[in-house]
Length: 301
Image (tube, rainbow, N blue to C red; front, side, top):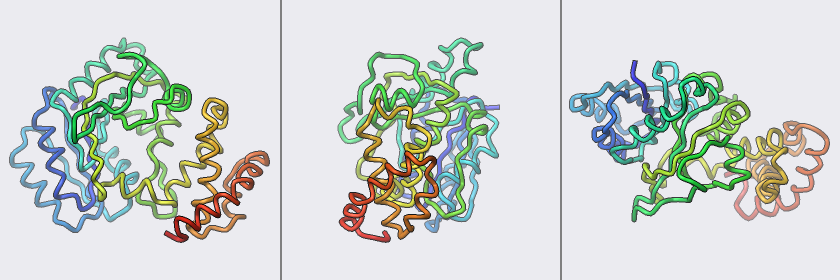
């Protein structure tokens, strides 16, 4: 059983998938497996993976599924995963040769008897264009839960997350009945934070590309149907952090109304998903601004 599963979801990313492969070939830590879930690609990604398999000295598992979104691909990969740790490497990612070594060494810096209190390790990213670090940590290594890290310490920037596989299976990505391209990852990590903490390490090991407009994440984060689930988490599940970061919650209340309006969802249906009278009133107060923003962005996109 490998220590780490590196998982890559891909959809018509044949041109950039080699970034991940080249990065994996260079890794100083070798006890890993690469699982690729092809989420309905039409660009003959499979033939490229066949070439990877001929060259690789590590195991590659390729899985094809009909297009169902990144969140579904993650859950599909977890069905095949037996490793201790699970790392998502998107199909346009590249990372330093010591990336997996940094993760495993940091994980092993936690006493074995205490690891059941942690979900995993979070490292930092750097700009692919010039190598500059993205964001800063208060110290080189520290422990926090992901809710505190975001809403209290304001570590609101791109990071890279390796997670215990058993925790991923315990709290999998939701797969709503409506078809989504992506379910917000932050919601899943924040739900884990109610039970587990994370070890943060100030190492810049993954490249962040700002120009990948067709990447899985870039396609998804601007979509109103997906972001509704993010705003709903703020409103229904994280209100105990309101006074830690009020601006973020005001944005959530307005964003929830705006995005429901944009997709044509009626007020009654939108408000039915909000818990409690107090929260419903706050969402209602956000509707006038949300409507203006929805019209400005364009309805039904």
